[in-house]
Image (tube, rainbow, N blue to C red; front, side):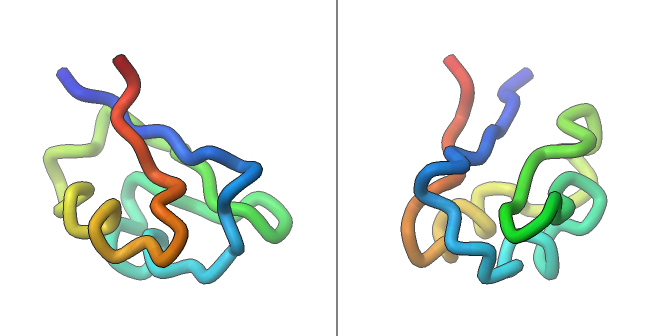
Length: 61
């Protein structure tokens, strides 16, 4: 299973990923983070990655 993560140094806190995948992403202060990686099948994480303006969301290797 692929697991996404957010590079906090790149995240601008735009909340696009949270609005697209609220089951997976939440805000912690002014940064997004992956709160439920096990729920990646419930939304389109790839769309969140593609929509992120600073490409802060990556797949963990």
